[in-house]
Length: 573
Image: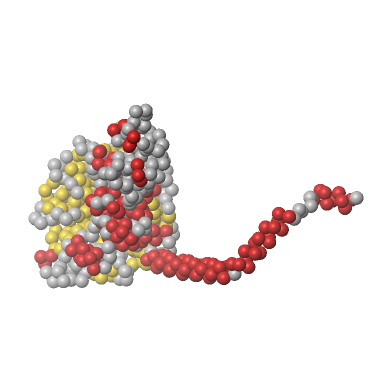
């Protein structure tokens, strides 16, 4: 969600941004002692403002110096040594101004062109800029760009108004994202009798949904790691699960989609056993092969199948409204806004769901089949994992006529096929048949300057699709064939052939970092106290120390130390 503006406005914004760093330069604000030796400044002739200094001048037009300098509403002229008496009566001498003297709309325009880091620096300049920068609407946009706004906006707005601002929420979430490189606790959840094929983490409700070969959908508490409920056997392998706070869907190999509607007043949202109300469960039929992938948005359900189709369903009527046909089995899909990305065989497709037309296709994304797909919340980046064990990152650029995909980077962290990918800014997590998880930080590949970002411009620093980037962390020590992975908040959930669900809890790293910050603050405070005491002691003994320093300087000047060679010669003599 980048800021867009016309070219002329962008140039003005860039000048205003420069003015933040160098107040008084470039906006016609003139320092009292500023000197310019040019005869013309910004198209204004000096002769039109200052009386001529050649022969024939009038008696009252005397000037001290060659050419002088006037400051009236930004009008500049060259000269030096001009005193107050040489100004005409109508000219008012201009004083130094700061950015806070600008209208609030212009200040907001300047701050809107900064990235989070620069906006935080500006907030430390003064109390006025701290208030303006901390309350700026850009923090909400920063949050939405990286992590997407939660699905319950009313509750979120209430929390923001009563407790934290968008800046505080952004800083806290950014700090929390760095804990994936710290310590963790791992919990193992037992309950499934066969391999786990799919996991889904609903962080907003603190719930985890899993299923697999035993045809049972299980719901777990994310924080406690306890089983909450489980469905009755659905009759076939469940390869896909998706959920939000209103609907839970599961796709089976028999070609159906089983849906549970949320029950109002139920603490854990869904009644998986269906004991309270039979109207909460719906089963959709339409696919002629196993359902391998599912996704939800506010109005639609998306399903992909080995029957080479992606079907789009209306959530209100529960009817299929669009069928997107592929050339091979569909392994995964990710919707965003009015588009949906899907993987079929070794290719990647991007569709327009309104018209059903194909926007672009990436042929041969991997050697062999492409099994895994993930997408950023803004829809600008795609991540694919394949049978060759590699992971590719693509940027989607919409030029108005068609969408284009460019490969940005590649990783080869695994020795086996990559079966699952999950992305939450800035971390990309992959699960492979080699029994390893790879954590990849994509921040260094992206641009951070907001005024340089537009919907039709690239958001990466460079394009080098052949470059192989190393992952930032690998999690080892598990059996082979990890089939599914998901990430949310400070947890990673994974399931595989073992038939257990593993949770990596990084909240301990967050607590450790909080304690470390508190200790650093205490050390800094103690250091400042010691320095203050030292300065007070030195000031109380100032006279004596000055006498000692003067004596030391005199002795260093008058004393001549003998040369080592000369001393040895004297000893020999």
